[in-house]
Image 1 (cartoon, rainbow, N blue to C red):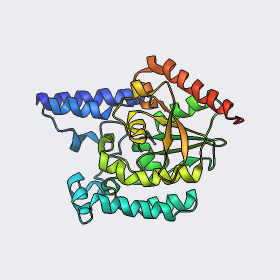
Image 2 (cartoon, protein in one colour; image 1 turned 45 degrees about the vertical axis):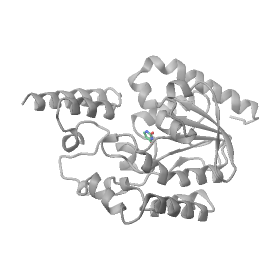
Image 3 (cartoon, rainbow, N blue to C red; image 1 turned 90 degrees about the horizontal axis):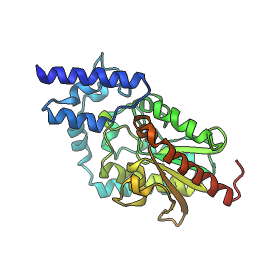
Length: 283
Ligand code: URA
């Protein structure tokens, strides 16, 4: 009873946050519920606006994560990575790469979500933004960064004359929404990585903005957190030899929860702007 009451209170709170434009941190919410022995997973999909409408049963959730992972077991992770590498290498353009990613069945998250979310924005743009993966809105629309965090991202980019329609390309380091908006796990990121690398090879951006710790740590292959990574650029290198300066930045969903950190994000945006100017990129 007490557990139900606290789960209900948490739901009311996260619903209210969502209405105010604040994206709940699902990982923290789950941790709180786990600590109070409550199970968020069956109930949580209805607890925030980032989740699908669970008033009716969602047929795509018929397989839970374990079932989905079991299905992947007929091939090893290495086999799936090899298949991703081969599909990625065979794609000669960004649209061909998008089709290759959509055809790939090696990520266990694919069975648990609605859409494969690949990219949005301008092909061949000087700026590439890479986030951690789709949330609820993105999963419904099939486009990256279209929810509340995406709206803030658009405003942040606009502050330095960047936008998806003219000079910015937007994607993620994982193409399928993790259940409950949890962080993607290492194996889920690993099977996506050949596609991410190929995307950078094909798009040849002048600069990459990695939004949030998950994307930045995965791309830079480091355990260092976003607090220490942000504030300067680092080289991102693909196995094919493309090297692009990467600027780690706070995730807009984090900034919605911690607006007091927006000034630090602004400094990082100014760094991006200065680097583009140095490289002679007209905005
Ligand atoms: N957060 C991300 O990291 N990527 C999206 O596409 C949406 C939200």
